Length: 164
Image 1 (cartoon, rainbow, N blue to C red):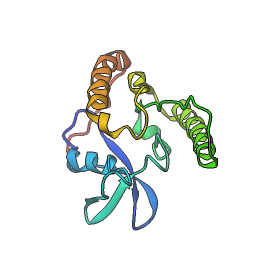
Image 2 (image 1 turned 90 degrees about the vertical axis):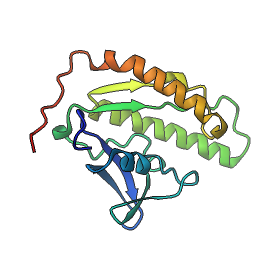
Image 3 (image 1 turned 30 degrees about the horizontal axis):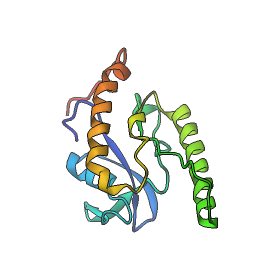
Image 4 (image 1 turned 90 degrees about the horizontal axis):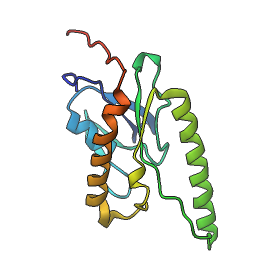
């Protein structure tokens, strides 16, 4: 990722230390593989002899480890479809309460840490767990991101990269 115009960091959980870590540098495809290693959907990703999984279950929008030195910070928000049906079981009540908690934490992080936020509202209609619709979801997310990125970056001065 050292040759990218905009620095990229991926937040993940290191399975051996059980800690949230911020990974940057190396091959972009390895970072992406770590970032999408969703527990239960994909196996842990190996990178530099360690195993990682996505931090999505720990924190939906992991901005906590970023500092002012990382600015400007562009966050991409993938909003979840909000359950409209009345919870029918204790498990559904707990899941709904966790959704509320997760949304509140995410909004606080966006307000405190992100300089630019791109919300991909077009994917909200896709429910979490609708894995058969992943190709449609990805196409819609890419389309919406490409549409919103130029507007989000308007007026932002890119970071100066040091010559190595």
